[in-house]
Image 1 (cartoon, rainbow, N blue to C red):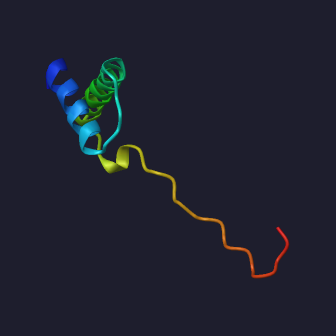
Image 2 (cartoon, rainbow, N blue to C red):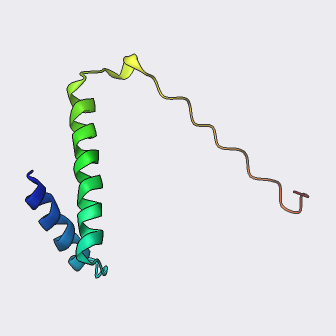
Length: 70
């Protein structure tokens, strides 16, 4: 996407969500969105497999027993 297309997307999304964005704020959001998209493209192009960096196993803490002191 070009810079103008990113800015148009930000303005359209803000309007759809009824978020008030002035011109300066929309431009700042567009800069960050373009940067995030660029980083995503670079990560996607890295060609890593799941085995290259396994995620930690998620183990939520158990819920405390009813009436137990916290």
